[in-house]
Image (cartoon, rainbow, N blue to C red; front, side, top):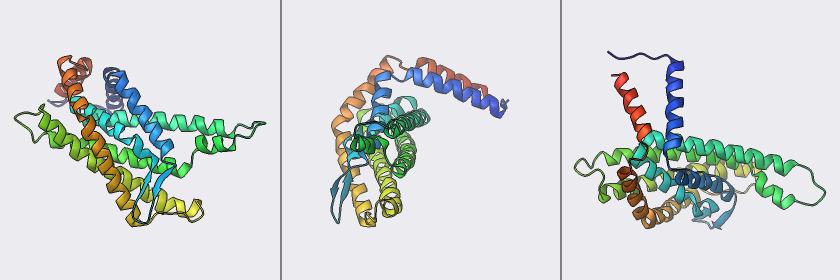
Amino acid sequence: MQKKLTFLQKLKEEHIETKLLLRSIPSVIVALFVISVIAMNILANKTIINESWIAIDGGILVSWLSFLAMDIVTKHFGPKAATKMSVFATLVNLLVCLIFFIASVIPTHDDYSAFNSIIGGTWFVLLSSTIAFLSSAIINNFLNWTIGKIFVKNPDGKLAYVTRSYISTFVGQFADNLIFALLTFMLFAPIFWDGFSWTFIQCVTCSITGALLELIMEVIFSPFGYKLCKKWKIEDVGKDYFTYVNSKNMEVK
C-alpha cells in the first residue's frame, strides 16, 4: 500500500536527503564546483572576443569544470543529486555576490572605483547567468542520465560514460551560453550599456563555439572523470545517502 505523505513530511524528507547528499559527495568536488560557478559569474562580465560573427566572454575559461563536476555526480548519484548540488552552488554564488556588493558600496577615502566596479557586479549579468546556469544544469543532468540508460549491457563502461558526458555537455553548454547571451547582450545590454549589444548571430555562434571549446575540455578531462566514478563505486561513496533514498522509495511502494 502506498504511503501518503503531507507536504511538510515530504519537505522534511527532502531536507534530510539533501543533508546526506552534501555530506556524501566528496568535498573536493563540491568545492571545485562552487568555485567554478562563482568564477563563471565574475568572468562573464568580460568579453574576450567580439567580432561580427562570434563573441566569447571570460566565463568560458572555467565553465567546463562545472559541467565536468555535474557529469561525475550525475553518473554516481543521479540527476536529482547533481541538480541539488547546482542549486546549492547557485545559492552560495548569490551570497558571495551580495557580500561583494556590500563591500563595493562601503565608502572609503582612497579611490577604489575600479575594484568596486569589478566586485560590485552588474545585476542583470547575475540574473542572466543564474537563469542560464540552472536551466543548463537541469538539461545536462537529466540528459546525461537518460543517455546512460541506453547502455543496458555495460552502463559503467567507458563508452557509456564518454557518450553521455560528451552529448550532455555540448547540449548543456550550448543552452547555458545561448540563454545567457540572449538575456544579457540582446535584452539587457542595449538598455543599460549605452546601446552595446550582440546580434542574434553572435549569440548563436558564441553558444556553438563556446560549447565546442568546452566539449574539447570535457574530452581532455573525461578520463579523470571516468576513473573517479569507478573509484567512487569501488569505495562505496555515498553509502548512507543511497541507503536512505532506497528505504524512502520502498516506503512509498
